[in-house]
Image (spheres, rainbow, N blue to C red):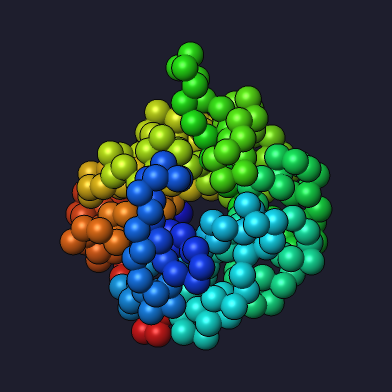
Length: 258
C-alpha cells in the first residue's frame, strides 16, 4: 500500500505567503514562502504545493522566481499552480525546479490541454485541480477562474474525465470549506476515491488532527494543509505522529537534507 502524503499548501500573492477563507474572504499575510518552505523541509513533509493566486486573474503564468528560490533551498518534490495555459509555461516551471504542475481553469477551457501536457511531460507531472462549490439543490458544481465562474460540471464526473485525459493526480478543493478549519468534505472524497484509479489529493478544511485522519481514511492519497499549519500550534510532526499512532500509513519523518 502506498503511504499517505502530507502536503503544506502555499498561496502566493505579491511574492508573499497568504491565506484567506472561501477563496476571497479575510486574507491574512503569513510570512515569507521561501523561509517557510525551509521550515517544512526540516519537518520532513512529503511535498509542497505552491499556488500563485493572482496568476489566473492577471492572465499570466505562476511566477518562476519564487520557484527558483525555493528549489535552491529545499529538495523535496513540489507542485506549482496558477495561470498555466501552455506547454511552454509548463516547461519553464519544470526548468525552474518544480516537479509537477497543477492545471485548473485551462483544463476546463481546453480538456485536450491536459492530454497534450501529459504526453509531453509524463502523467506523473500533471495534477488537475478541481475547485467546487455546493449548489442550492444540494449538489456540487466545478468552479473555474479562482472561484468566480460556475461551470455546472459535476466534480466527480469531471474528475473521471480528467483521469481519462491522463492526469497523474486529481486534487479536490472545496471552496465552501477553504480556510474554515471545519474539516474536509469526506463524503465527496469517499465518492471520488471509489471511482478514481489515480491518486486523490484532498484540499480545504483541515483544522484538527482528526480531520486529517478522516480525509485519509475516506480514501484520499494525500492531504493539503494550510491554515492549520499557519495559524495553530499543529505542525507536520504532530500530524505525522498522530496519523501513525492511529494506524494510518505515513512516511517516517525525514527532511530532504537528512
